[in-house]
Each structure stands twice: as C-alpha cells, then as structure tokens.
Amino acid sequence: MELITLSPWDLSLAALLIMALALLSFQMQLGLSRSIIIAALRTVIQLMMIGLVLKLLFATTHPGWIIFIAIIMLLAAGREVMVRQQRRFAGIQSFALGTLSLFISTVVVTVLVLTVVISADPWYTPQYAIPLLGMMFGNTMNGIALGLDRLTQTAWQQRDVIEARLILGQAPQQAIGDIRRESIRSGMIPIINAMAVAGIVSLPGMMTGQILAGANPMDAVSYQILIMFMVTTGTGVGTIFAVAMASRHLFDKRERLRLDRLQKAIV
Image 1 (cartoon, rainbow, N blue to C red):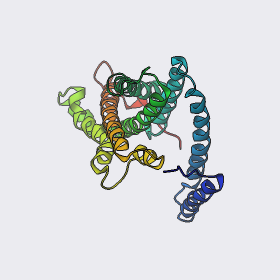
Image 2: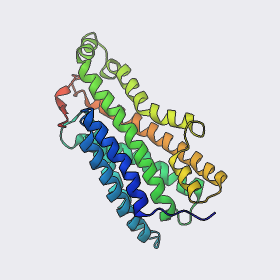
Image 3: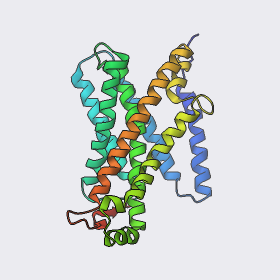
C-alpha cells in the first residue's frame, strides 16, 4: 500500500481546527486562546526542526550526537516538569529534582530495552534510540509533573494537619505518608488508564503512525505493547522517586515542615 503524503495545504486545513478551538476558548473567556496558539506554533516549529535533525542523525550512528540530543531532550523535559507545578521548590531545586527523576527512570529503562529487548546493533542506533527516548520523556514527564504538583499543593493546603501530626510525635514521612501515596497515584493513573484502554477505546499514537506508514498491523502491535510497558515502568519509577525525594525536602534536619521552600508559580 502506497503511503499518502500530506501537503502544506493539508496541514493548513488541519490547523483551522486549532484556530476554531482558540476562538471558542476566547468566546467562553477561558483564558486559553493564547496558550493554544503558542502551543500549536511550538508543535509545528519543534517537529519540523526535529524532523530535519533526525534526517541527519539517521545518516550516522555516532554515539556523541545521540547523547547530545538526549541531553537536550532531558533538560527540556526537566524544565517542563518544573513550570507545570503551581507550587514548586525555589531556585534550581525543582528543576534538578525533575531532571534527575527523568534521567533515572527514562534513560535507564530505554538503554535496557535497546540492549536487551530490541538488541539493536549498535544499541544507540538513531532509528530506535531517539523515538524511544522521546516517547519515554514525554510520558514520564507528565507523570512526574502531576505527582509533584499534587504533593506540593496538598502539603500546602493541609499544612496544619501535617504539623499537628508532627506535634503528636509522628515522623515526617509518616505525617505526610497519605499525601505522598495519593501524589504517586495521581502521577500514575493517566498512564495506567491509557494502558487499560489501549486497543479498545484508543489506538496509541506510535501504533497508528506505523499503520498509516504501511507497517504490518501485528508488528505495530508488538512495538506498541513494548512502548506501553516501557512508558508505564518509567512513569511509575520516575514518579515514585520524584515524590519520595520531594517529600523529604519538605522537611528540614530538625523534622520541621518547611513550606517556605515552595514558591507559587507566576502565570
């Protein structure tokens, strides 16, 4: 089956849907019109740029370029984790926490899959490494951001409860234990839902793309199962690590709740 290519005119017609959504948001005074337009422009520019970069990368297998692209993706994802939180740790701590969590969960899982499961030769082959890293970073980033946002927001709202538990003699991690567990759940629920309805309610993006490109549907299914398992593991590990580290940082060495370390995001 011949692949149907999309022209700039076809993409322009699709862009009208975004313009209609932005107009609807403006009429309803949702305050999202500007964000929708900017996000759409970023999507076009960033995807066009990465398309050109990948075209060059696929012509080479030098590991230095792969590492360079991976670092850029990691730093960009770490920044997005930080800016999506309504209350975040002041200074570079919030960025460092999100970036470290992403690195530990995403890079380790991706390298493991590339070397053990896919067994690409070499393991850093751009055709496999870059798309897998991209999907891992994108989904894990969302889970970590949701988990940290839930943790800091709930800790702020329930600060009196936490301090009362500390006064009664509970250890810091015991006093915030229920909030920590709910924060981890918040970060993991979206990807668990996506995994639960895959193939019934939705066809995941990677599988859809392969099918549209003419791949065998069963081959596309196999890769999608691998991706879903990778993403879920990365999201779970990253969210657990990020929330655990952040919950510890909410207290000082004297086991006092230190919400002054948080700052409210400026929208």
